[in-house]
Image (tube, rainbow, N blue to C red; front, side):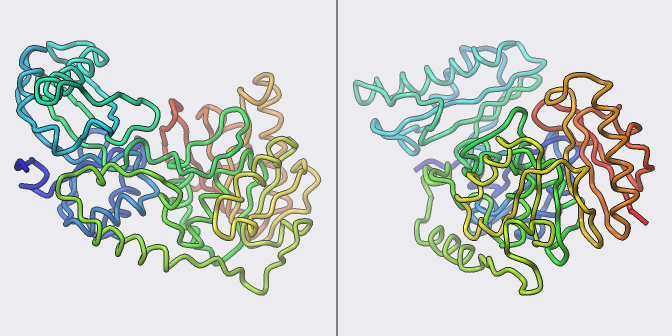
Length: 393
């Protein structure tokens, strides 16, 4: 087994969306990471093996965790190919295992990310052909080994993706509606709301239920990667199955799905349940009911079809939502009217509550008619959105 960069330094890199950096740093501290330092669209941190497994299994905010194998100056595709072959790829792959590569290049002699990824793929394939006479297969959808190639200003880094792909894919999304919220964004919103499960949470525009499912996973202490089938760290040459099983068993033992006795359990009484929501779209409600089935205790997420205008209102509740706009509404006038009416609803029927509203289009903040206590830019899924907090008196 070779001596790889992550083994010498025990330093890793976590990728996350712009605006969630502080959330990510706090989460890493809670999970046991040390030497946490900000980087470009991510965070560097150190962790021992046990802590690393716990971080990958439990993180709700990060989209990827990378273990660097090698870092080097890279001025040409020829040198990329040659240097990549210095890695003993048999440490990570066999002929029966599949692999895939994500690549990103910027301000370098190699200008095309797809081409850079192809060069790395060829280097791996050529090494196996030379030694074994054949090569492992590429599987871009569900590989056993996901590699990451990053080249910036002619400096390259080849890493193993420890989650085996983007960690926003929790595994509970059986059904969806148009423009669903990314799971890691929903988790960041919940962290910024400081909701801790001690008072009811409601989403009146719940869509396919991403905020509701993430809230349930947080309250029930379900690890974010609980439903994940493959992890990239399983392919590391120093992977320790005994330590991983201990970490996973301990995390799963902490799952709790008990509902406070003071809260109603009936589907028709969704507004008095701990975690509940509604949507005017019948397909959205159907999607929530399908998605919650994958989660332990998911039936505790209560959902119903309702127009927010018909709701009685909420007292002492955390309201977290992403109102429809643009994509789900026909035009700007409809969006502006809906937000104004929703603002009136919050002001008139939700006194004593706190609302956290995510706008996929920041210019819509003014349409609500309420002054936010604070605003936090959050970028995810190609949207430059904004989260606003409203204290409702």
